[in-house]
Length: 403
Image 1 (cartoon, one colour):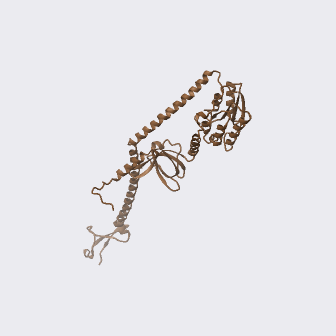
Image 2 (tube, one colour):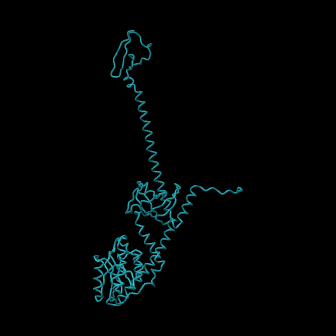
Image 3 (cartoon, helix red, strand yellow):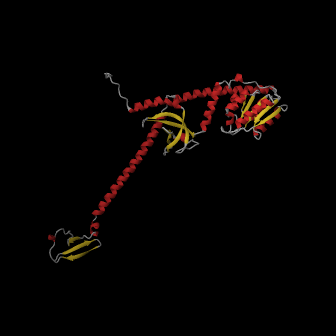
C-alpha cells in the first residue's frame, strides 16, 4: 500500500506543462529536422497569410502550420487531397495544448523516393568497400585505345569525339552504342561494358551521357551497372550529366568527371604535363574545400538550431496563431450579436406597428371627440344635441348626438 506523502508535490499549471513539452520536443534533434509524407486535408489560409493544414495517412493525422514569410516563397502550392512531403520541426502550440509540425518546405510526394533509393544503394555498396580509393585503378598516362559507352545519337558522343581529336588525335576510339535512359538502359550499359572488355580491351572506358533530371539519369544508379563498372578490366571514367549531378556510377568508377567533355579530357594527356598536374591539384583542392565547407555548414546548423531554441520566435508564432483563432471567434460573435439585434429590432418594429392608432382605425375603429377636442370615452360625456367630431382611417366628419 502506498503511504501518502506528508509533503505532496506542487501541482503544475497547464502553461508549465505545455511549455515543458515544447522544450522537450524542440530539444530532440530527430524532431527538429524531419520530412513527413501524407495527404493534405483541412487546408486554410486566412488573411494573415499563414497556412494551416493537416497531413494524414490511413491511421493518423498531424496538424501543421507554415508561417507567411515561408509560404510566400513556395513554388508548389498544395491543396486538399495532394500527396506531399512536408519538412519542418515538431513543437507544441502552447495556447491550444497541441503538438504540431512547423513546416518550412512542401513538395509533391515522390520526389524524395528516388533519393531514398539512391541513399540506400550508396550505403550498401559503400559498406562493401566498392567506393574505396585503394580499390580503384590508375589511369594510363598515354592511352592507345579508348572505349566509349553512350548513346550513338546524343550530343555527349559528339562532344567527346571532338575533345579527343583536339587533345590526342593518335588515340583509337571504339564505341559501344546503348540507350542511356529508360527501362532498357541499365542492361544496355552493362552489355556495352562487357563487350568492350571482352572484344577490344581498351586502355580506358568512358561511360557518359548529357544532363537531365534524376529520373533521366537513373540508369546510372542501377546496382547492376555499378557492379559492371567494378568488374571491368579496363579503368572506367564516368561523365554523367552536369557538374552537380552525382550517381552511384560516379562513386564506383575509377574516376568521376563532371561532364562527358571533361571525361574525354581526363582520359587523354594534355600537350603539357604541367597542365595535367594543375588539373589534379585543382581537383584535390576542390575536395578539401567542399569537405571544409560541409564541416563549417554542419557547425553553423548546430549553432542555428541552438539559437532557434533560445529565440522568442516560436512564442511569437504561437501568438500569431492565437490571434488568428481569436479573430475568427470575434467575427463569429459579432455576426451572432448582430443577428440577435436584427431579430429584436424586427419584433419591436412589429409591436410599434400594432400599437399605431392609424392601424387601429384601419381595422374599422373611430376616434370621437367633443367640440373642445376632448376624447369621448363614455356615453355619460354626451348629451342629446351635442356636436361631435369623428375621425376614421381615411378621413373625418362631424355628427350630432340625437339620442
